[in-house]
Length: 235
Image (cartoon, rainbow, N blue to C red; front, side, top):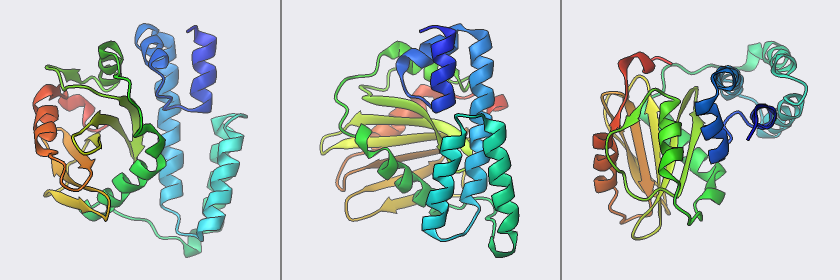
């Protein structure tokens, strides 16, 4: 992959999970800076959208317009979103620091939005995993077992790492979210999913699988195998 293709794909999706993008970014200093700037803009755009409480149909239309305008450039999209936010300021409400319940809802929404990756069967190459963790200045000090999907993702207002691993009952979704951890562990439970969000020394780890899945071993393996520098926890 050359720089032109990488930047074109980044403009379409700053969190493109393609392993070739991760490899190019890790090898090219200029493209690494370019991609990090795009992801930072994307985080700010999505954060504003998440803080606006409006009818779902209107939010969907606005998101569609923002996605379309990304082809013109992030400055145009940000300007449109800013005008939209100001026009609705009298009817909006912002949320404070996320609690466990809000984070659990965010995890479930993300699993639903990325459900097409749950059927992935081909293991992610170790080089791709290494490049992904390198984006955060983090390291894998040990193997974490087979991973069938790995990508940088946005959880509320911060970037994190989304992993999908095969379990005994079905796929296991894990979200490594560096930053300020929640005060205590939070259970996640629906009719079809069960898991937990647990605070760690570097942030939060959410692991979710089918009810009855043994996720504790996978959680422990992830925590033991990952090392996050303290300088990255506030990004």
